[in-house]
Length: 308
Image 1 (cartoon, rainbow, N blue to C red):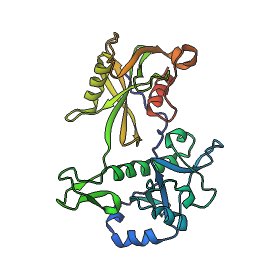
Image 2: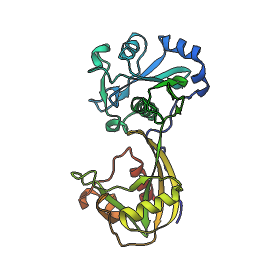
Image 3: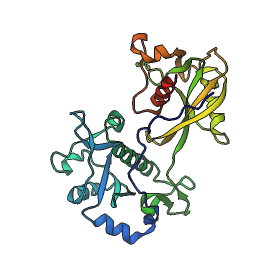
Image 4: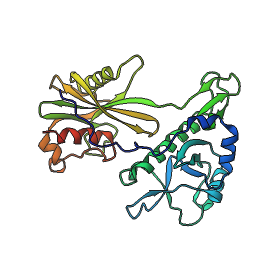
């Protein structure tokens, strides 16, 4: 099975930030930077990002400075240093405690929008920064207590470490690895209709989380066999994609199907089928839809489709 390279970067990749990890431990620099009116803040409100131009189909990220940033910070949510963007410090700040944060901001600042709804329209660098902020703030808001003793934790390293105030255990941001794979046999590929989308006609690549003690290739073979009953041979890496919805990294593969008969796991799939290239090129005409354009699933399909 030939390796099919990624034709272009995936959504949410290509961050313009220098993460400047060493700066996280410089408490004086962090304090001075937080007080600097030129510092940029990426607000996150209940997992949504601040953007303008959404209604016009030309969304752009809104990063706050000065008084507007201070107003959002006064909501009392967690914050974290993301890095440097053209030498300007950038922080994420969660303002979910505010019932409606827009009145805290000057008029015309836009609205808080689900990143997934517009990621394909945002400039790549902006989508990456918003995804970074969203994922890190999700971790901060969901991991306030120690998993060892249950006591409250305090942030350290500019928001990148949570330290238990009781037992001093350190907790770091969590990213869950998941494999996502397009299984190919001859001139057809395997797609499934997930139980998670009962009202959709979307057929997508199979995917699943990597289990402890398992290689990525083993996870690919196990997930395909469990969900569709298809045996997999060669597994070739394609690309990866941060997927902070809420906290995954998607590791994409093309895989060789060794068997053809399908036996679905009804807990995971409503249906699974082998699709020809002709069907994939005209999904609407054949009564199904492909995954969203900003997903690595769509990229895996399109890059296979482009191969002659």
